Image 1 (tube, helix red, strand yellow):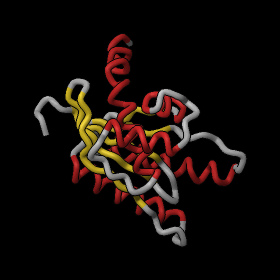
Image 2 (cartoon, rainbow, N blue to C red):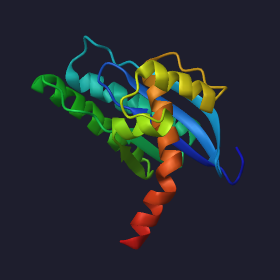
Image 3 (spheres, helix red, strand yellow):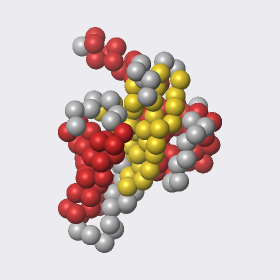
Length: 169
């Protein structure tokens, strides 16, 4: 890793599948590092699923040593039970990097799509295609991993503005 590079961990939270993607950013240059999907055991009790997600996220953070993390905000769907479960997974996804001392940014799905594709209503296939263009060495095997890389790319594009806003407060 270039000494001037910032390593960013992007996360796409989910209880069934949580995507993660790591990129290095040097100036305006983006470089793919790794990506994957965490699959908590679906039949396990909720506590075990969340603990599995937490352990795996800590492992990703320890393995790739990111300096910053970014998480996609979740939307509220029509099923309150599903929304609650997703919120629990999202809490773990926010906790793990924060617990490791990383600053954690959050981005709306519309902003992620707009940042990567140019349109907030882009389809997942369009996001995946653009990730392939922006990060030619990227090998996301799932939409979740591709989405996580898109979150990391979004953070790379917006982190300077966010830092300036924090400094102004």
